[in-house]
Length: 153
Image (cartoon, rainbow, N blue to C red; front, side, top):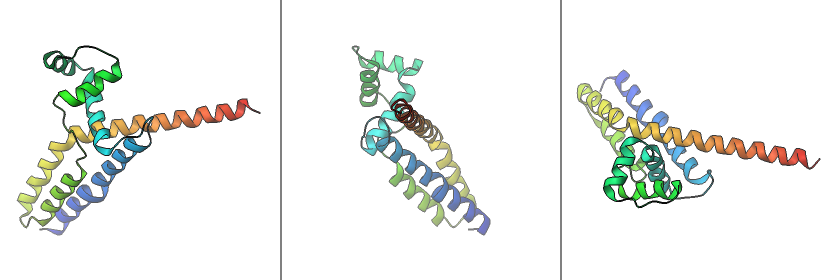
């Protein structure tokens, strides 16, 4: 493979994008308002992203949603509706990255790289948004702790 093409693939599919997504899933699973498994973190992130959209409401009606709290609804969506991902994708994504790196033809490698980027774009964006929400939650908790500390003085 051409050296420049190899650098682009290795940077985008290893250290940058995959590690960032791995960190995002860990943060969603461990640092939010409740602790959950990585699979639950992925499934919940995907479910919340579509739960209140027109598509999500339509799928819920067709699949038999009977009512409940917004939290129950999002969890139900995660169990009963089509989601971009239902489990932690990092191991599979790393395997795909390795297969792209092993490709000897730069044209085929570029095609496989592009397919990876295109096929994971929505899921990666949803995980990025969920991570941002966890970061906002953490910031809020820090602010509340500071206010409690100030109040006690």
